Amino acid sequence: MSLLDIQNLQVSFDTSKVVNDVSFSIAAGEKFALVGESGSGKTVTALSLLRLNQDATYGGKILFEGQDVLQKTEAAMRSVRGNDIAMIFQEPMTALNPLFTIGNQIAEVLMLHEGISAKAAALRTVELLDKTGIPEPQRRALSYPHELSGGQRQRAMIAMALACRPKLLIADEPTTALDVTIQVQIVELLNQLQREENMAVLMITHDLNLVRHFADRVGVMEKGRLLEVATTQQLFAAPREAYTKKLLASQPHQLVNVVSEAAAPLLQAEQVSCTFDIKKGWFKKLPFVAVDQVDVQVRPGETLGIVGESGSGKSTLGLALLRLSSAHVKGAISFEGQSITNKSRDALRPLRARMQIVFQDPFASLSPRRTVEQIVGEGLALHQPQLGPHGIRKAVADGLQEVGLSPEMMTRYPHEFSGGQRQRIAIARALVLKPELILLDEPTSSLDVSVQHQVLLLLADLQKKYGIAYIFISHDLAVIRAMAHRVMVMKDGKVVEQGLTQTVLSKPAQAYTQRLLAASVYARPDEVAV
Image (cartoon, rainbow, N blue to C red):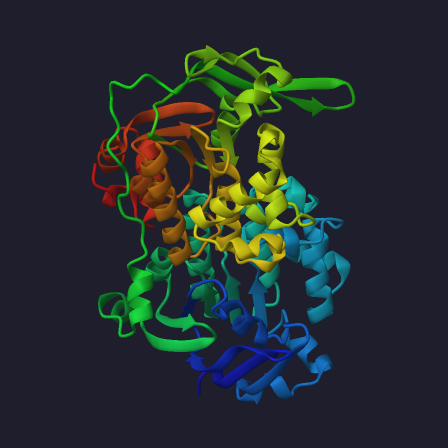
């Protein structure tokens, strides 16, 4: 008998059916992955196992160890959640309580489900943190979520999920927005813990490379339906469904255009350093060098890729180049041969229209209180007021069409759009001013593979059409390989390697770059061609 047997599952919200007639099973100790585009019903299906979908109506059966979860009382479900079935959520910062220490939150689970004393729970918490690879577990148990790195928060979530030794672990996008080396660490940790505890794992992800290296079997979902289920090897070797073939074909491929090497630099920076003051005690501050003497050169129509682990200084450098950093910045920065190093805020304002930025998280960067028309048109109202309301509205409509969105969407708000659509709105906001340079800070990190592919194609087409230069910051080396003409590899604020993308990523000279490449394919460093 299977550990989990889902039979004809249906999940509806009001009149909208988001999961329709889904059936699959998971054996004890098996690793099963659900893949598909955003909105396909993956997470809703996973949350149904714990009856965590608010205001949902269920149909069908969810048999866990032969008992139908959908027929259990809420009191009975509380003993299932965390005890028999545990879940690792996509974004630990929203799943962890910011007002309680990591240790208190894990201990609470242990005391609730196992009925042990506070002292015993505290000792067990330290053991769990140590088991999941968090350094100095005793000290970290006393830390609050915001005091941990992204990888440490994810490990803390795993520790909490494993506290009661569940028979089934649900991992919802457990590596999203983590850099490649941390991703590998998390995957290796999950593999190790799965073997040690012999627990089943249901992985929800859009990372097909992760699926290839982790899962035993894969289920593919589209628009609430389960299209096909196969072993991982079978699915990647011979997918049956056209949709599955499209997903597999959505991996980034080379999109770069030819750029004249004789062209004068659009942006040039020499010996750029960024320093932050870190408080130590009440009165003492210590300088922290986030970027250390970096040279940058970007030509018109060129894409410069910047890669490295989290904390390497990528985003800090990007913001410094556009004079948007809160750090103490030293060095010389020029735009079209004009120095902008010491320009005042007012003097820089005319240049802002020519240097734009697209952030990692469009949901955070788009005002929830403004319509799309107001968001996209804000820059035009500031920099080109002579257009007037009618002219601005027409420019916004044209900008939305440029990124594949209908002008009819202008009256809607950000929350009414998917992640890919919100990112297109963010690109339209930058593009509408006809900039010469756009800083792209992890613009595809949270998008599923097909939407990511669409956004990359859009960016490549816009670059070809308008000759825009990109500074493309990413931890996804496949994306950088597809988009960048040249690449800089950063570590601890320094550039450790740079050159033509194809050269650096096919024959890396530095051990650090080799490690990044190995992590990007979930391989050992000695498996990467050098």
